[in-house]
Structure formats: C-alpha cells, structure tokens
Image (cartoon, rainbow over all chains, first blue to last red; front, side, top):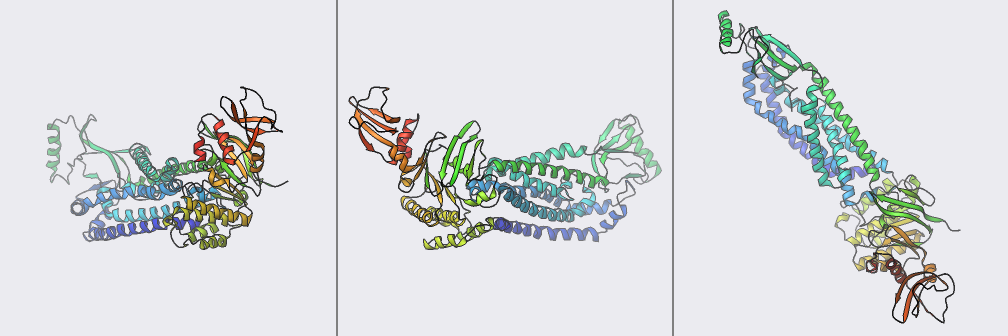
Length: 332
Length: 296
C-alpha cells in the first residue's frame, strides 16, 4: 500500500519539490540580504536592547527603523503569497486523493483487492498527511526566518497575515486544507469541482476565524498614558493593536489612529510641553487632560493565540477526516 | 450438492428514494458461467457491487462462498472483479499493476499468471496502460483479476466499450482462463449476443427485480413457443404454468410459455426457443420494457 501510494503520487512529489526549490531560490537570497542589513545597520541590536518593554522613552530606534522599512517594507507583501500556500497543498494533495480515483473508476480496482478500504484510507490519508505536515513545518520555519526582521521592525508578528505564516498556525492551516480537499473530493467525486469547493470553503473558514474568532480568543487589554508623558508605548513590542487614539478628559476619542507625544523628549523644552498641550485645547478637542489610549493584545500572548488558532484548525481537520471516512465507506 | 458460489437473499439497495435493486434472491452454483442480463439501469452493476462488497445492502444479504464480502477480508480474496470500463491507473505499466496486485494481495497472488497471459497475447508490459488500446486494457484488467486466483470472477460489462474483434478476443481469453482454472463467473452485459454462446446460467434483471434465474438448459427446456388456433381471451392452456408473451391474429395465437406438464400437441405446434427469444419475451412482458436494447 505504501508502494502504491508512492507510485501514484511520485510525480506530484517531484513537482512539489521543484516548486519549493524555486521558492527557496527567491526567498533565501532576499532573506539573507535583509537579515544582514538588519544587523549591519545596528537596527537589530537597537531593537533587542528595547526588548518588549511596554514603554520607551527617547528616540528609540525610529530613524534606523525608518531606513530599514523604506528599503524592505514592500517585500512584506510577499507574505500574502505565503498565506496561500496551505490552500495550494489542499488543492493539489487533498482534493485529488479520493476524487481522482472515483472519477477514473479506479476505486473499484483498488478497493476490490485484498486489503480493506479502511486500510487504504489510513495509509493514503496518513502518508499524505505526513507529507503535508513536513511541508508545513518547513514552510512555517522558513517564513518565520524570512519575515523575522520585518516583524521585529514594528510590523509585529501578531498582525494579520504575519501571524498566519509563522509559528505553528500554518501547520494547522495546511492539515486543515488537505482534509478539506479530501472531504470535498468525497462529496463531488470529481477533481476540479473538489478543488473549487475546497478553495471556497478554505477562504470562508479562514476569513471567519481570522476576522471574527481570533480577536476574541482572549479579552483585549487597554493602555492609557498622558500625552505629556516622557515615555511612549513601544511600537516595536510586537503587540496586536486593535485601536488607538487620543481621548480627552471626558473620555471621548478625539483623534483616532494617532498617538501624540508632547513629553519632554518630543518637545525640546519644558515650555514646549505646555505649548503642545495648550495647542490641543485650542483645536477644540474638549477638556483635558488628554491621554493616549490603545486597545491591544500584548505581544506575550502570541504563542497562546498560535496555540488556540492551531488547535481550532486541528480540531476541524479531525472532524473533516472523520466525515471523509464516512463518505468513502458509502462510495461504490 | 454443489457448493454455492454466490448466494443472495432478499438483497436490496436504495439510492435516495429509488431502489436500484430490490428483493433479489439467487443462488449461483460453483463452476457455472452465468450471464447477468438486463437493460441499462436494471441493477446489474448494483448487484455486482453488492456481491464484491463495494456497496452495503439496505436489505437482505449476499454471501460469496458463505462469507460476507463487505466485512470478511478472506471473502474479498476469493473474488476477482473487473469493473465497468475496466479502470486501471493510466500512468502505470502492466508490470507496475502486477506489482500493485502483489502488494495489495498478500495471499494467493500469482504474478506469473498475469505476466504469462499478457506476454502470450502480445501486450507490452512496460508501456503505460493509458497508451494501450481499449481491448488491450481490458485484457490487462482481466489478467489482474485472474492473478488473484479467484474462485468467483465478477465482470461488469467488460466488453461494452470494445469493438467486435476485441470483444471476441476478450471472451475467448475469458473462456480459456475459466476452463483452465475452473473459476465460477458472473458476467453482466446488455448485449446478449456476447453471452449466449458461452453461458450455462442466466440471471435476468429487469426494473431492479430478478425476472428469471436458473441453468440455461433447464430454462430452455421448460419454455416453448406454441402456435395454434386463436385462443379465446383469458382461456387457460393445460400444461402451461405461465404465458409470458402472447400475440394473436384473427385465426392464430402464438404463445411463449413456461410449461409444467405435457401440452396438447394435437392442438399446438411446439417450437423450441433460443435464449434470446426467452430474454426478449420476459423483458417484453414487463411494462415499459425496451427489448431492442437487450437484443442490440
């Protein structure tokens, strides 16, 4: 059975290897150059010194960070490509697994030999699942490595899309996509409709979890500090900021998506601070005191969120595989 | 008493609300070559799939040499199955398919049977089977089924897609093999002509029911065509158990009947019938039948 699985899928395995080699040929050089300029410019050391402190005073690493972001910021869009890789595995490894057999009628050949259908399923699903697991672990490690400097440089690994391609979540997504492909194949019994169905379902489930479920995995925290404060929230800490802005003394959000630093480090002299605050009052923002405010998930919850997200998708995977096994039993 | 190769009792399968096969009871003695005949959609494939354990029955049961093909793996080892359109992995060579058989059948697999047969009829072993002709693919599928050394060989319309020459060659190969190994065969076709010469047992399915089953010689012996003077409507004929088909002209009646005793030969001229006549009469007797399909 293992021989048969290998013989049937060796061409797929070859193409997967070729695709990965091409991907690596693009990512390894860009990753290396990004990392070396990250370290050589001193940005790496600066950010490490900052750590994940909640507040930072002074200039921080802003100018170094800005320079790095100008150079490499746009490459972060490659992360969008990473996000699609799990569903590609689902479409090409999962969807044809049962659907191609049924479409060609070969299930009647293989299921009437001397092994049980259960054994056929266990071997096939198991081997393809194992391959998907290895691929996704490699993918998660590679993407984490490649995105590391960009994430550290204020993009934050907690953010949408960046969160999705590193840690353990990609493993959950990939196995889920493969299981979805298999189940779709048992439902449509044709390869192309199965691919379409699993693509649509994958996007739907991922979007639902990402936009509706993930933000409420844990209650968000809030952070408030006076705009005259000498320190500012550390934007390199890697926390996931839902909302931020400036509130007036009555608690109304008067500026959104903004933070204001009137502290002694920002305004050069002590009068500067007073002028800064006074200016605020004149602009009609209501009564003081003004505070910077943010609603966020702190950076140290990253792995908790990864675990919850991965667990959710692994549970879905188990459910889909159970359903697929039931469906396969009824195919003739 | 001879062993029963395939035994079904009250066997039924439903897809949604439609019964594909209903209340099917039959006994196929070992050593027979049985024709499973019926128009398209009569339930032939369903019956074969139930017999090989691809389907789970909704009612009744099927046993192959006394074992449940759905749950007993040894039963599966006894059955060779050639599915409709003889599906094979098109990118596999015949040699690879034989290797696959060896991997999937730990017990009883005889690669030599398959390899020798294919070599003898000149089928290349190292060419992907997807590039062989339909007739050659059917031969490969048959060789694979035979290499299992099955006691019961089930074939689902194996020749339906073949041209007449390939059809003839396939049937010849099948009969040769069956003679050699003494395998019991159940072979479905909607083309009766393919089966008439070679089969000694008949299972006739129509609208998901078994219409007729039994040894061909017995069936032919008890069915005759009677030609005689016009029979009044509803009149019984002594010695006739069932009138299967009747046609009347003004002065003459032609009846195809199943007899259960001597017929008055002074009144009727008695003609023997062929298997094809018998099948057509039975299919024609049912409402909505299209005998032409069977005869085609």
